[in-house]
Length: 305
Image (cartoon, rainbow, N blue to C red):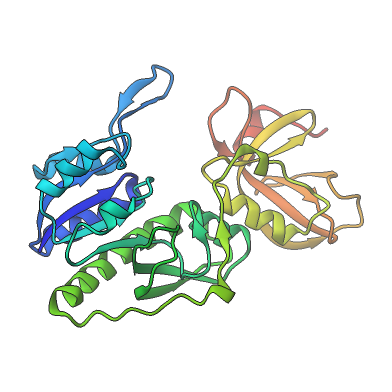
C-alpha cells in the first residue's frame, strides 16, 4: 500500500519500521521540526526522522498542516493511507479527507480510556493494572475516532513508564502490521468509542513532581513510576531536594508522621507515608549530580547521623 507516515518520538519508530518490513511503499514521512537540545542547544532530529533517513524515505517537517501549500505537497504524494503515531500535531479535515483508505492512529492506551498526550504515564500514575494499544480511524476531535483494533498488556506493580513505553511501542508496531493488512483486504472493522467510559491523559508538567507524603505509599510509588524519566518526582530530605526516579514498597510500617525521614538502609532512604507505610526512595539525583542509586549517593553524602 502507498502510505504517508506521521510520527515523531521513539514510540513511533517500531510502527514505521513495521510498515517498511511488510513491504509497503512509504512515500513520505512527516515529523516535527528539529528542536534544540542539551546544553549546546544543538538542533536535533526526531527519532522518526533519523529512522526515515536511514531507510532513504523523504522527510517533511512543516510547522503546520493547515497551510495550503503544505497540503498540496502532501496531496502530490498521493497516499492511499496516512498512518499517525505520536506525531504531535492535529490533522485538519482537509488532510483527514485526503487518502482513500483514511487516516489511522496508533495510540498507547485502551481507548476510550486515556485520550490525550500522556496515556502511558497516567495509566501508571493511576495504578492501572492493564493498558494497551489502540488503532483507530482518525476524527477531527482528539482520539475520538472509531476503533479498528486493540491489544492489551498487563502493567507490573513495580514497572516504570520507561519499560512499559518500550513494550507498547513494539506492540503498536505489530498491531499496525495486522491492521493495515486488514484495511487493504477490506476486512477491517470499526467500532464507535463508548463516550461514557472516556478519560483524559493531559500533558505532563513539573507541577506534578512534588511528592506529598500525606498520601499512601502505593500512591507515591505509582507517581514516581509514572513520572520517570520526565519530569521526575521531587522530595526534600535533610535539606536536600532530590529528583526521585525509583522507589520500593517493602511492607514496613511506622507510627512516625508523614514525611519523616526514617533513615537509610541498603535499598535507600526510608520515608514515612500517610497510610502508616514506609516508602524507600531507591534512585535519586541530587542537585549537580547524576542520577544514581540512593545507597551510592549516601555513601559519599550521609544524610543521617
